[in-house]
Length: 178
Image 1 (tube, rainbow, N blue to C red):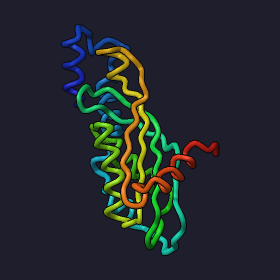
Image 2 (image 1 turned 90 degrees about the horizontal axis):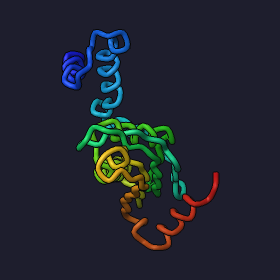
Image 3 (image 1 turned 90 degrees about the vertical axis):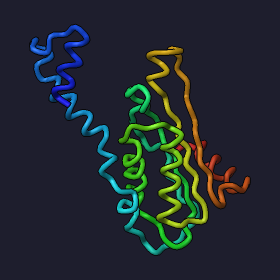
């Protein structure tokens, strides 16, 4: 990665030996290692610790995330909202944020990431229902192409959340201030 970054700087017409760029190849390599650490995370392991308590709907609102668009390698960022209805057990709330990290810290599409989070919860917790909503801003859309900012919203609803009363309760809870 360091060699590629040096070459990239040269192709752009920069001198990688100038003072401000001397350490850039290392910084870029470190940054991409951190931004893609989701590939080394296993969703099943993240969700393996459960407590045998069954409760009503569990919602984690406004989980921050940053990801890289696989088409342009530019960031997209925003909030993830997760809801699930446990059938047998609950997981620690921090596990939900770690699951978001697991999938957001990869080269990604927002639509795929939304589905991957819902699939992982469904497959590992076997809840009565799962809801995942992702709201994001894409720099590839703002900085190039149409050069326009827009909030992109994607959702995956499974099980009980496909019923209007449960779905409405979830969205009402998302609208309520903390």
